Image (cartoon, rainbow, N blue to C red; front, top):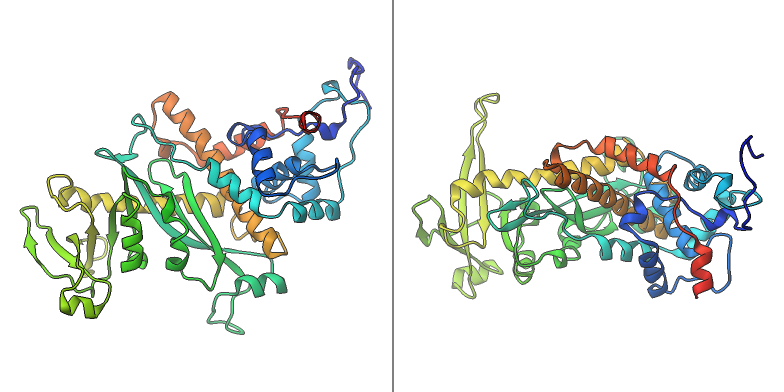
Length: 411
């Protein structure tokens, strides 16, 4: 019922013609959403209560409001519009079944394409802590996400091993490997696959996001000759840790303590000195006063062969920036999704769709944090992700968005 003082609108627009998305429409404008939906062949042939564009934003809303029910998320998307905004009769929220069918029609492809189109590096020369000399710092790493315990999800993704009970984990899992910008925590590349796939197997789908002018950091779990070669072909410089048992011949010692070496595709090639790939090795040890008696040794390989361009005493502490990726994962898994929360989708396509929606929402929040930090002259790392997440949720529930009906009329 209208409240006292409200004026009856002159338009006959429906509530479903307006969706309030707040900051998400700034990062993922409706025109781009329509484009990726059309390219994926997921556009509707007849007008529906839930057009494809609305469903894309609804899935983003599910990732933003991870603890809310299906119907409650849809209510939040339209909550910001008053009776004054231009409709004469209320719009009933679709049932959970109707929302699930709409997600199934959409599929995961538009959300993946949306992430790949938008997720680009954010840092500018004015961004604090984002560059080493003139190279943009990025890091590659992986993690696993628990998904709904259904037979379909278990068959598609598998379960992790466990030392308790039946020997398998409580939930199926998907593996996520991503490439993050260290200075902004923005994920600029990602690959989602079964838990049974290794991080190295999925990393190949992420390395295409590398580009000249970047310096990529990686843990020793990614130290394979094939991945190294593929990453080098992108034009990016590399600084990867390798296991301590890797045989690396000392070919030329430099004044900074590093030395030139070579890696090979196989042990046979190394014995025959065939097709060597030149690298530079930095070795150092971390002495922790809080843990006497421990001996933590690091061995780093880099494609920067000249010590003058990157001295060893600069690259050794720089490798610690790799842990910025862990902070990004903490934001995504603990604060945005919720601690110990499980992705709600019960089908493999729904899981992939939801995973890319989570990545999109995290990028949107990091975009907002970077914009505020640059404007205020602060380091984006010093801003609170949790507070920004709350602000994004408030804007979604209080700002009007777009009209899908206008798009239908233009078409």
